Image 1: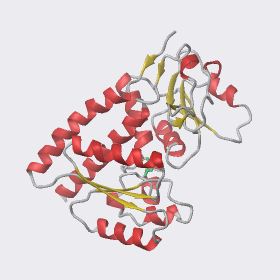
Image 2 (image 1 turned 90 degrees about the horizontal axis):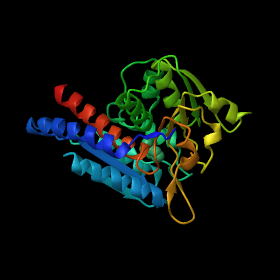
Image 3 (image 1 turned 120 degrees about the horizontal axis):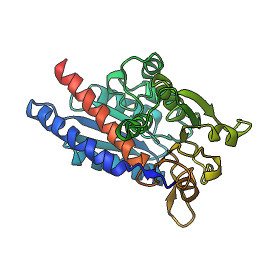
Image 4 (image 1 turned 30 degrees about the horizontal axis):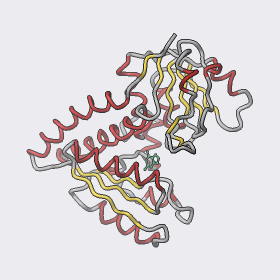
Length: 284
Ligand code: GUN
């Protein structure tokens, strides 16, 4: 079997075309969706991600701004900017790019964002609402992964899902969304005893660790849907995921590539959350 490629660029463009129409309709009524991105430090990958987010806003008729600070900025200056953005009616979403420099307590910074503008869905209220299955901002990467399943008609009810990685950004919310969708979910991590045995049982396999080649074809159940959330840079500068694509695609039924899989969908769902926030603000 050679897996069908789940193309995040194509699905992202399809969804963004609809968002653009909604953004234009909202702008005609006087509200242009607005996203503000805060970046602290000079992490090269973060700079690229932030630039991609800002460019996506421009293509989708959103207002966007970026606030870039040196790594040694006072924490209070960042908190003051968040307070200013919380009160700014042009801004419907605030995103603080992670990771922050070690000096920062990420929890304190994220909790400073107004809940109504927490388009990353990282605040405790949003996490709690997600666990309870209540409407909330769904963290963008797992939200994008769910869109792949929806678009490709991949069933989740009663399926065995294995999430490798337990981060707050991906692993934990991903497990919750799959559970709500009716999958039986296992979360594997660095202390898991027999990763291969768990992965081999998975109808749905999500790799979200950040380790090149962690998942090989031998670890995949024939016919599985394999979603690669990893973005790793090789010595030659090329990007690759956590899944060994060449061997995995011979076993899986569906697979996401890196780049061009989950990455574009994360940005697409950031636009979705910002648009939803703007629509809520306009109808308030
Ligand atoms: N760093 C890596 N992924 C993300 C994300 O989805 N949101 C933010 N804010 N930072 C990230």
